[in-house]
Image (cartoon, rainbow, N blue to C red; front, side, top):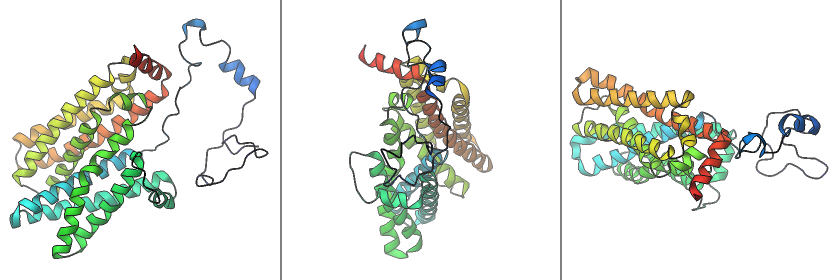
Length: 331
């Protein structure tokens, strides 16, 4: 009998931290049936250059909660950093901006933590990730960035006076890490598209995070010139880094294909269009049209991270993408 993990209970048992994880039950197939369907010829026959057209690597099992966390956490990190800078150099005139930044940081880290826990499935797993710090693991480092940033962001809103300011500075210091570590997390994998774009991916994630944060600030009533300047710069950075990702990933045509075909390509195109529209309205629009531009720009940031996520999954499902990327790296 099997619960879907194909572990023979006579020679092994399911225990430990992941022992209670639920898996989808898949009826076992008889070896003869599998051989007849998948192993009817050796890989070299018929011009094949893969293992029976099967994926070489196991695609990530992340659900939509993870790219949603990337969006929420990135916006929170960028807002926390902007709030700390405005607090340090803006004086009393910038206090309304500081307050909005703190609220966005608190909301983003809270919502993002919820998305992360939802993907893990069990709340205690997030706490277990904080038991040990591993500097060589982007996921471990990210957990130790998210937890104190969330606490500091909440404290900056709740605590009065100097204590709130101190918490705001702490959240701001951790903000760049929160906005960027997810790019390291994804590119430090064997997923072809993510690995191929590892140089441009951090710039894209940070630019997208800053664009989302400034869009939220505009939507909540901020009209400071500094926010508009940062919004324009972030949108330009998002477009430029997106182009760099396409160039890096498309060095091997098969690896970059998900950015040009399928649902991920549709999201990718929509993100660029939305970012351009938001940029134009931010530069030339009036007060009301700038809010429309901010909303469109926010949708562009969301679509960009979901597009990268889906494109990476698609490249992992393509066995030829993995082979061709590896062959290109040694040629």
